[in-house]
Length: 184
Length: 365
Image 1 (cartoon, rainbow over the protein chains, first blue to last red):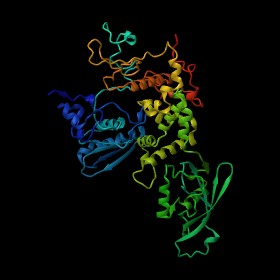
Image 2 (image 1 turned 90 degrees about the horizontal axis):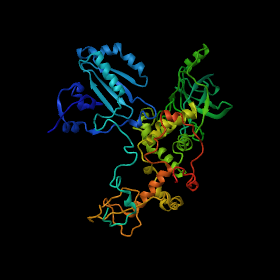
Image 3 (image 1 turned 60 degrees about the vertical axis):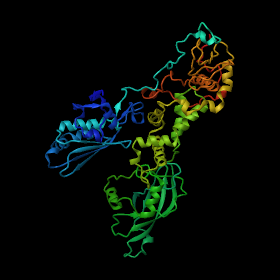
Image 4 (image 1 turned 30 degrees about the vertical axis):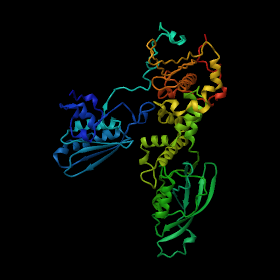
């Protein structure tokens, strides 16, 4: 069975299943394509509402940061809230940021997108810089579920002169020939 | 006399925007007979609307007002029949469905507006409250369709006949597409409606209301750009033949346009269909499209194509070439190119106006 390494550039978003594999971009496991397709499937490149062709609309609608005020696993989250969250909110005025203190719960972020999709990420024991990176990651996502990309580009016109058919490179004399013709 | 905003949404055939201004009188002679024990008192308040040029008197509305001595809060309900008034109001700046206001008025019967006393105090001290000047902005929500049909489509597909552009407009103005765009923009969380979740129709109409509001506030140019960026982009990846069925509309095979083309021997397409499966000397050729044969011995194509299908496809492709809707043509002018479009206002040519002189993309040699 052919095995494929888990390359970082294949991943564009995370789901609940992928959330269990923390630091998936750094994962050193070797996962088969069958397993990958079973959980995440595959798709082509797409953008919600043809985003970017006319104008770009950030798809992140609201993001909720849940943390605990006392536990050590939320230390990074608390530091991020104190120092960097305000900058994120000012830089993204179209995103609603919610803070939810939850006692004795692990820190996590829940992102909701314009078209209704949700995504969440556990931030247990993460530092402030890592959390900032994941916030930026959620902010720049399309919101679509994670799937393996079959191709890294998309075009509506794969062929300009027309796809190949059996008469593409045939002798033009065929057009004016009466059949059956032994020579052709 | 103190002034306050009352937000009313009446019968809404179109989602027009109207800002309504009502004057509230807290101490009226009609209230003197009310017992102090009665927590409510009926107040008649004249309703006026100002369209910027003249003030219209819309009659009086009955309000239930709390029987407070300080009148710090006014709560009222609209008992007046307002369905006959041909204007609508944007409820608190959000797209509002009629069902929401009917629900609010029927169930609660009391709507708190603002703290009138506070507002009056602020005004007495020379401050400014969040009370906007009266204005009536009445427009038609079909501005979206108008912009698409009269402004944008003739410019992105100039050689398309009027029937084709009408089919495009119909597709772009369809309820499904309006819902899809409104939903993808997150409009479902902003709509005030009784039902939850908001229906497809409600979301679509709310998007149209947003377009209308944009037109009223920012003008046609901004609205055009908005529709280009969100509505016209939905044509990307779509085959126009899926939207507009040419052969079904006016029998392209027998149309006078094709007859003109057929009479020109130079440019007459050399259409040829031949498939002789099983013959050892000639390879059985299967024709994808653009092939037609006058030969008597015509065999079905390998993939199940027939002569009539090939004929239709050939005529179809010829018309696509004439109307500049083939894949090899330039993509839609969107984004930066869309901003540089010099939009024209005239309609596309009808199919009767098409002629070989106008079909200047055919080279005669």
